[in-house]
Image: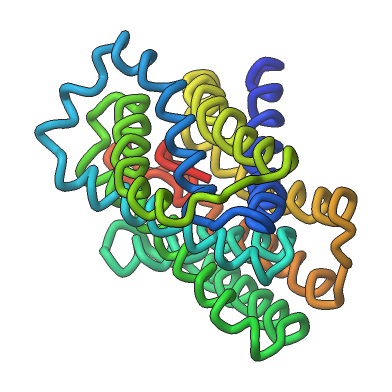
Amino acid sequence: MTRRGWALFLALGIIWGIPYLFIRIAVRELDPVVVAFGRTAIGTLILLPLALRARALRPLLRHWKALLVYTVVEIVGPWVLLGHAETRLNSSTTGLLIATVPIVAAVLVTALGQDRLDARRIIGLVVGFCGVGLLVGLDFQASDTAAVLSVLVVVVGYAIGPIIITRYLSDLPSIGVVTGSLVIAAVAYTPFAALTWPAHASAAALVSVAVLAVVCTAAAFLVMFALIAEAGPARMSMITYVNPIVAVVLGAIVLGEPITLGLLVGFPLILIGSVLGTWRSRPRSPAAVPVPGAEPSEVR
């Protein structure tokens, strides 16, 4: 990979590692629906002119059903559930749980007959799930159960999204898919955001929503498209192993979140499991499904 490719990789790894920090800050004052609405609405305003200029929206009309399902499982549900979860969970813990997306994706594509599991990958999946079990068992109380389950639902949604892209939307312009999904999500959130709109909010909460929209959504996808063009989608799978590190470090430094025993034990197991469970050692045919977690459909 070239210097430009590594620079894009590092930038995207950081950008997709910081949403959990800013979600945590925003939901201290704002309803999670309001946060999700602000993120999608502002992101739409930024990307829509680019999508219109590229004439990338009209092709979506033939595939509106798949786009709608993709938007629900990748944005509408996950972004609200993440917000609610982070009213109880540390941002670093949430980011680490989300790091299991490639593991779940590997299981799903295998169940669909689009991939196979060899001994190395099975070991990786077992190690990764053991890491999650230790993280949950050592760090969480019974009162956190709903929040943990919400994040795990998000994980499943994030794993299903790329499969939908691969099967039904892969021939469409990426910026069109992203912009179209943001438009649908913003419209879906609008009535609920209106009902929970705050009378006032601090500068920290408003800035957090702006960062989520401008940096973690609009800029993230522009950087992602550039990285795919520079290094290909397979190299992007490594982003998954960088994001949780950024989330844990920022949570500890900015929010003073503790480095718990669950993080110390579960963190390395989840990362090792993700690497072993999703890293392909042999090249696949051009028709093969891309590496789980490496899709240009990831929205964080």
